[in-house]
Image (tube, rainbow, N blue to C red; front, side):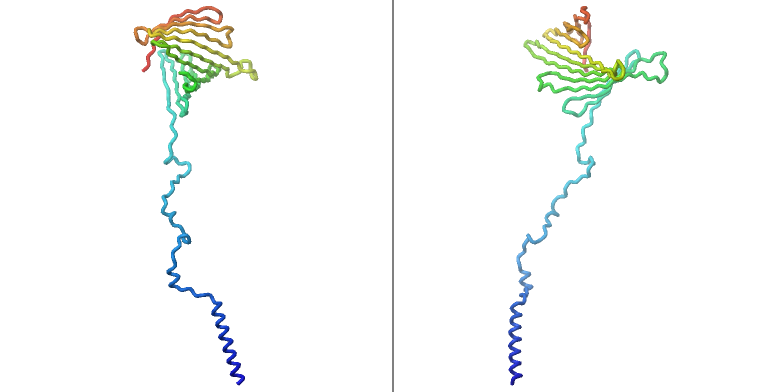
Length: 269
């Protein structure tokens, strides 16, 4: 009797323990319910980047697809004289905002009878020219020139300025100014001595008339002169042609007066 009662109590205890385990066990997931859950794009990888166009990637240093810089324009001239001498000018225009030209001038004198074969007789000089935009300055012309001439043992920097003003009835007036500085390349007094400098300047007023006549009055001065040297001139074109005749009266540094009449021919093509 006692054994049967003990078995009954044990059976009840097992049933109670099984119910407790059933309540605490994790719920099972239904496969059909999981398959029917809605799709959430935020939880998936973004493959849209694969459909974007491939970026244009170029290797550094290659010129394909890039704009090549403009090459400087070459300029030059050659002049052969009847005595056998030759002068050559060669240079190029630089790709700058201001019109800039650089180059060299080489002059080969006529061969002399006593010269040795292969003897070097060429004389060369380097130069540069810059045309400054005249509009902001209110000028028609503004240039800066530089030249280095080892044969003359000097370097020179100069500038030229001009402005023309119409007066009326075919009459115009032009104001001209120029300044220059010349310096010796080597010291004339030996090593360590300062190089010499020379300053010069000139100015003129030019009046142009409808009769193809031009009247000019001006003066120039330099650091080597003790006075300003005035000059007056008159130029007349002949028969509406490139021919012209010019008469000039100028003063020398010694105080003497020079008078000259020259004829010229000027034509561009």
